[in-house]
Length: 560
Ligand code: NOJ
Image 1 (tube, rainbow, N blue to C red):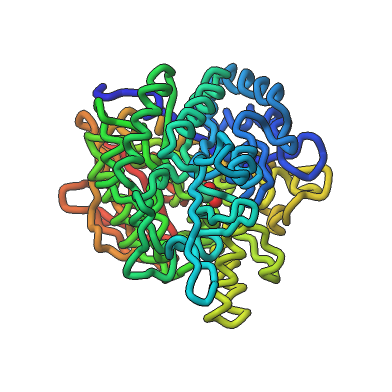
Image 2 (cartoon, rainbow, N blue to C red):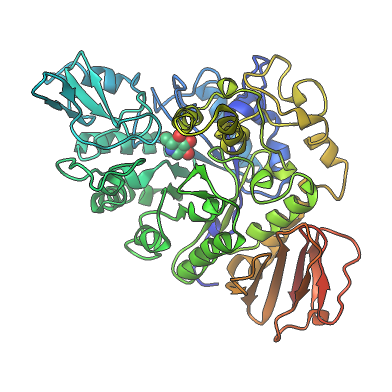
């Protein structure tokens, strides 16, 4: 089979460690907890785990602010426990990927602490330090007009060094200066450290931001948010640095890389992921399909548009076809829960199944986020102050300038990343079986209905549906390698697409509506010739080459 690779055939389970499972009874998820759940993970028919950051961190951005790249956060365990976990995972045929967060470190990382000291420090140029300007009135101004994605302006003045440093995210996340060859050597050292230990690859955090335009110019016209983006996103040097990492490190291991790249189009992604000698990443995490109910950021809401979502999926499917491999996902630690967004809480299991088949049967490597497989839903806390996430707090602060308090709360309830960060719902027992101690964060109150234990016992549960889909995908070259074709892209209620491979076809029909609607097969398809392989209701009649839908109905037909 052309271009066949292990990473194309795998499915990945994504763990946000703080909320997955607490093994040592302190209310915080950890590696001992993951060890207990390895058989569960394996039972999902996934082949790998991606860990959101496990490293020591002051947790300004829950692990995405790293203070030591070559150790494990004491909340999560030790290097020894991690090695044990790696061994146990490998024994079960599960690969392990780490999160590589090198666009920025924590301001508590020794490099940054040293860098503040001045020119004699070997770490002097590890970050973007600039003097800024002093105006006629004696007021100090930052070096340029860029804004951070998490907290106001992108520059913070540091008294000790008497200069500003750049932070594209929170103040406690200073950007590393990747133009400095010493910093790139550090990145390679980090990569080798984990790969030599047996780790199987990396998810690379905002990796297309690692190069900034020479001279750090002002951005015009000035945007209200993410001002400066074009001066730090997808610059040619980012590609060159990734090429260097590949040549010097990754090429020497059998490993996998997936880059995270906000606001990137398939055309841009192809520069990095087109298969061949110039490829620098195996896959790229797309964002456009997650913007069908918002504009650029989850916080700027608009009504869900199925047409927009389909366009985004098809755009990536079509443009990468035959050239590169997709990363498929609907949830991760950065987004609210998908049933609460694109599905229906009222039709929880049905819409959950429909959404699962909708993306798992596309061409690419699927990522399943913890709790997604049981259909965990958004958290709705009664006050904005109870939310923890730095981005949520920033969003609430900005929204408060223009919206009344009640609207801000509603917005946060709908969009906060904290909805994906509530403790995993294992049982209907105390603390949802996540911990014997008081959990570090709120457990969603629906845990009595939505939990792993209940769904294990029900052959028709969403959990078991995920298992069946993931197993089917792995066993069918048609799903793994078939071509993709969308029908009726402008239809506002149905997503219909087809996969084809060596004379076989799979037709995926998804209703995104609670209404009873008529779905008619495209002319060239005779539904009676197909075998129904997945559906989310019983009694799937076909009448006159079509059917009338039930809420969020899904049907998948195989034509062999
Ligand atoms: C992307 C990560 O997924 C997100 O959680 C984090 O806040 C930012 N990058 C900054 O590291």
